[in-house]
Length: 447
Image (cartoon, rainbow, N blue to C red; front, side, top):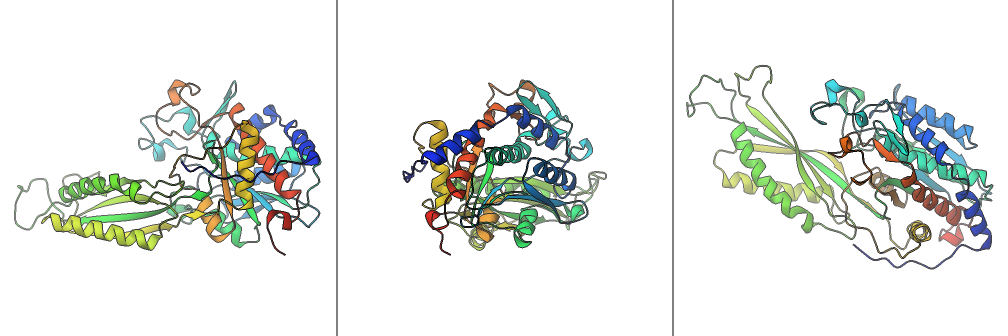
């Protein structure tokens, strides 16, 4: 945890009035309904059109000029703008819109769990302060709270100098969907930023009630161990037949030992990158009489801003070469299948400092810094190819608040508490007012 120096710049009397007026406009019932309605719009990665079109319509209905941006016939983004007088900075509020599960038991079960729970399907329901359904917490509540924040700024009639944007994109989940144009790994936001949408700096919303200026990246590897196709009736040790599975087990165990050391070696100010062996594939499940000639091992390595993908490739190659040298029966090769370098914003940058002031304003205490994390998001891509970005967030539901049936695993990241979103709304309102009511020079930008 890194303690940051925060520039003391309290809101003046006018900005304080605007801030309080906007905060007083926060409507928990409106927010709950938006989370519910957005959760009901199914948006698996690469098929987000319905949800993004819904958001464009909603934003227009609350006075935010918005439009749908198509990417494919079934996928697209949405962005809206509240125009300022023209002499201030442009700030973007951003959250993704796609969900990590398909909502289809044939595709999600058993890998997401033994049964399809209510938080894994896009059929939401409300239980008091909770909204439950696929993606209700992540990503739908993140987009909803930013929308509520900008809506409150509009309703409070804040006199903006700079434009305030709100944007959402599909293809944000860290997975790839070949049947839907290989969507995923920030494909939607890459399209957004290369097709006419940009800003001077921005805020992304994700879980965890902390301020992050570093954004993890990731590198995926596929390792293949080779043997020969076999037959279950052949005795072990028969000439010309070698298992690919047993050598793979040795590789997995050795990689796991290395993965335990990997995080400490690459820890930066706010990122402690993790690594997991995430998937295995071998043979034909419908004909186990014939062991396969190749076993594939898939890994996800998270990265910190101290690393570049090419450096991770070299480190991984050295690890694999050492493993092969230790085992006479391991015949293996490997390849990189995904790269997404980490990003970072200077903690002295205006938007980071503004977010830190917002956090202290809302929590009424000094911001002591954020714990290390490794959650990869669109933030790294936006930061690298777009503009400086800071991450704000909301508390993840603890077991004391979570219904017992949803406490195990991630589920569909589908349980959100409306009251727990309100501090993040206030933080977003603060950053909009603190930033967009100033001139470009006041926030450190040069014309």
